[in-house]
Image (cartoon, rainbow, N blue to C red; front, side, top):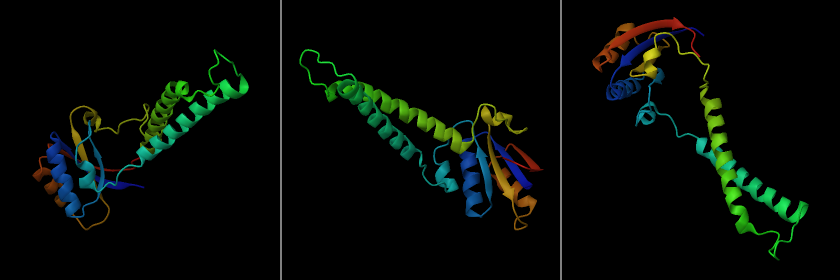
Length: 175
């Protein structure tokens, strides 16, 4: 689907936040915001709901600790029971370090995988031309012109009033 996009480039994250807040207040559709670092408060300004990623981390952590305890119990008490000095075969305090490490491993790997899958951020994904500086020192607010409710001048006026250092327009397929 071809869209008409208006891109404003900002050097200060506060100017970007102000411009995004005004666009949301005036019901100007925001297509995307690109920044080289996380901006505190941007998700509230854009109306983005909290992430469900912590639930993925919790589920993977529970799976990791469960598999860790099960693996150690099965190997020590069921599959290969060894009586070492009269100690019990199912000594759960001895199982804690390995189960803890598996919890951290499963939670970390599942969180990273879920983040990459959900956001579509891959090492081989190319940056659209013109947005190269957004990975270094510049922020971009991308507005979508979905109907004729706002003429082109309104987009430029809002972006320039809030300190955009450069404006571009594109008509192309994104994502």
